[in-house]
Length: 238
Image 1 (cartoon, rainbow, N blue to C red):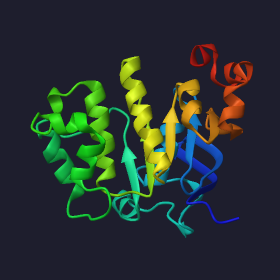
Image 2: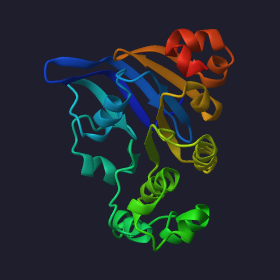
Image 3: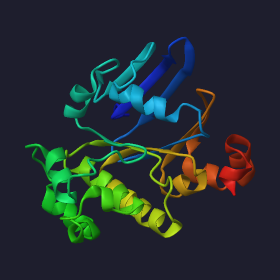
């Protein structure tokens, strides 16, 4: 079996003296969409931040393409081909849609050009001259995905893409993630809405209080509503 694109082994991450992640291990293979699920405070975003180098892990291993990257600065990890769609979108609101994409592209080359992103996300093409701060939540989420794509990542880390969006917009966002996976982009998807994420994921992990409490096939977990309720709570499974 080939080495997964991303492998995390025995990861411990603290904020000060407070332990957030406790012995977390997971993998993301080539072309896989892996869901990382859990309630607020479970450690999902901290896992993403640890991979990116935004929060240095206390101990453990993070390898990307077989190379140890634990503790690397975020810019260096990004240059390897790790893209990030952050929770809350975090774009330059006074810049236009096109200017946000141009800033993210920053001379990088690859299959995902700005023109290709606008073709794949036609709504953004219509809004290319509108300031990002005047976009709706769903339009901003699409821009956040497009912004990550123009850097041509092999691995895309997506943090809570459904947060604050209307159900129909969420469907569009998830359709885009499924399309990216079908085109070969590996995705680690952080999400509270378990059943939504499990519909598109190949495999899933569930975090609870900083520990992995489930690891397995996404469809198998989705078919067992009682277990989803146990792992995620009644609200997440409803």
